[in-house]
Image (tube, rainbow, N blue to C red; front, side, top):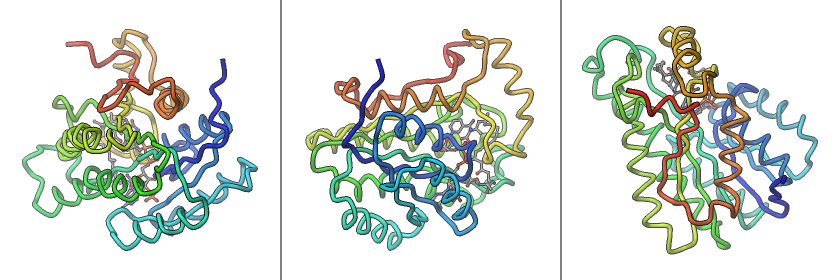
Length: 257
Ligand code: NDP
Ligand code: KAL
């Protein structure tokens, strides 16, 4: 059965290029007939995002700037969305950032500024955009964010991002409790490693992927499509009883000792 999200509108934050997990989610939503609004952080990827969105051939799609470190940009972005579409039914938060020098060696080497930057962009931003999105989710809604196993366990090199993901996962639960009374659900997908721009140049990604292929119960690495389809489930009514949940889409790797 193909899920239909015909007549529904979703905000997708965090497409940088065609490898982005956000783009996998967008494709799944688009295939289900949803209307999409894309947000990007800097001018750096504006053209890339616009080029990709054009390939959807959907003239209802919108592309708006939204650097999540700036309250005025978040406010302006959701004001634009309100003006142009009114009601939204969901939001995909696919955003994370930490300084490269804090993603290697010992976690302890992080400084105050780097710690706060990673938490600001990768964790607080979910709460900031959830607050703005709530105002437009007048028919109820579903918010989905992305996390990684390194938020639950120590994974080499993930360091300050792991601490930020722990905060993000706790935010999912507190937000789910706050927003449940408005019919808004909040969940996270804990994805297995996928080669994206963020993953580029950090750690020894090839050996991480090889370990998944050799040891994960499903003996294969996670794809954007698998994450996209689980997001589709979380955005649809099929998951109407699910909130405050962290769903692992990682070939089962997280169950291993
Ligand atoms: P991408 O590099 O494709 O996406 C990261 C996105 O974060 C970019 O689109 C970037 O926007 C955005 N971003 C960074 N800073 C800001 C900001 N200040 N305001 C708004 N957006 C910002 O990588 P992924 O698709 O891999 O990452 C998406 C999410 O998935 C992240 O939360 C990541 O932690 C998570 N994840 C990734 C895994 C993987 O293996 N790839 C595994 C598990 C979780 P811009 O390019 O415009 O700066
Ligand atoms: C253990 C893993 C290996 C990699 C270690 C750390 C990965 C952290 C993810 C974090 C989002 C990466 C960055 O912030 C990179 C940033 O410093 C430099 N890159 C950029 O600025 C690019 C151009 C932009 C688009 O990136 C961002 N983020 O804006 C973790 C692996 C196995 C799984 C991953 C990659 C998890 C994850 O959270 O992404």
